[in-house]
Amino acid sequence: MCVTCNKAFSVKSYLITHQRIHSGERPFVCDICNKAFNLRSCLMRHKLIHTDERPYTCDVCNKAFRDKSHFIKHQRIHSRESPFVCDICNKAFSVKSHLITHLRIHNGVRPFVCDICNKAFNFRRYLIRHKHIHSSERTYTCDACNKAFSDKSNLIKHQNIHSGEPPYTCRVCHKTFRSHRSLKRHENFHHGEHPYVCYICNKAFSQKRNLMVHQRIHSGDRPFICTVCDRAFSQQGNMIRHQCRHIGERP
Image (cartoon, rainbow, N blue to C red; front, side):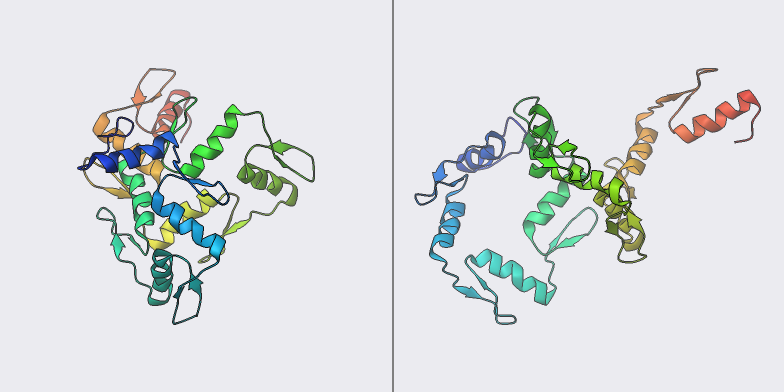
């Protein structure tokens, strides 16, 4: 069993390979460009870059691929096949790795751990972005006001201040948003998707914050306390309505 994320394996070699996710170890090195990989198969696939050999060709669009797995994934674009289905919310994916990533929404697994502060993340890109906090390096600079950022996405969000244009648009209703996260949250309403599932009663929600509010029913957590009478509430809106009664206002 992995001591970092408690994932279990039936074969010791699989555990050793898995632990490289957490340790960052990359023992397989390309003898041409010195790029390192955590799996031998990834190194072998990489070496095809140096030969430019593309033996797998799509018979629909003639696009060629170095790697057979990429070729198979590409073919699903034409067939619209999505064989990998989430057994919790039934969302389907054309690529298995996308399903594995998606499942972290439900199971809360965070396999990517910062080696400085031990904060854990469910996506590698979030860990990489987080590590900039520990560094003073700010490589992304706004060309309008010269403010510098450690993360490119934060620069893009900042630049919206100057342009005044929300960059993310819903393809269904054309409503615009300032962040990609807000757009995805909004699109769940159109698609009827409820990816956030309560592990106690299996009730599903389209937004994570709604799931968190719901789970207080099971936990009994009441974090919002009236400053007048100390009555506690599970939702902030209920507390505000309650406080209006003390001051004689209609909520």
